[in-house]
Length: 168
Image: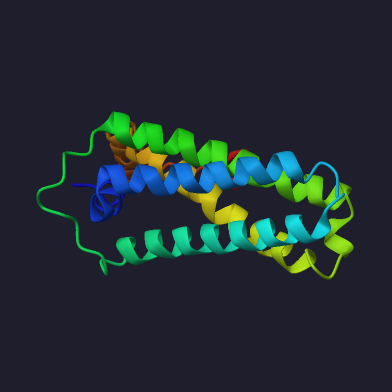
């Protein structure tokens, strides 16, 4: 079982999906509210709540990756489709959080003492969410990843050198 499947299996597929969708729903509600800064107190509360939720979710994933959360042996099998679905969900969450950060900046919420720390916290967690989306995407394609490593191994054995300037 891949590490990505172990992470999902540690919470169970349905619990995992509930956490992902709860976080995405909270982010989507905030994205709708942040367009205008009419009620800064409400936005500040929701920003803080979202930031805590995202940070806690990233923490759960880190704990599962470190092996601190053991997978449920009775959990259903994690398929590549499940991993791909999670990659899509994290990509959507990333886009929504990125929108919130940018809309907050435009609305002047990064200069407000009630909201600036939460916006910075979201911005800090943005990279972790993007990395999770990429990680689940790669985990859903084990043949492609194995092919990449096999090609790299063959190139190293042949002594092929690649100019780093050509690497994207």
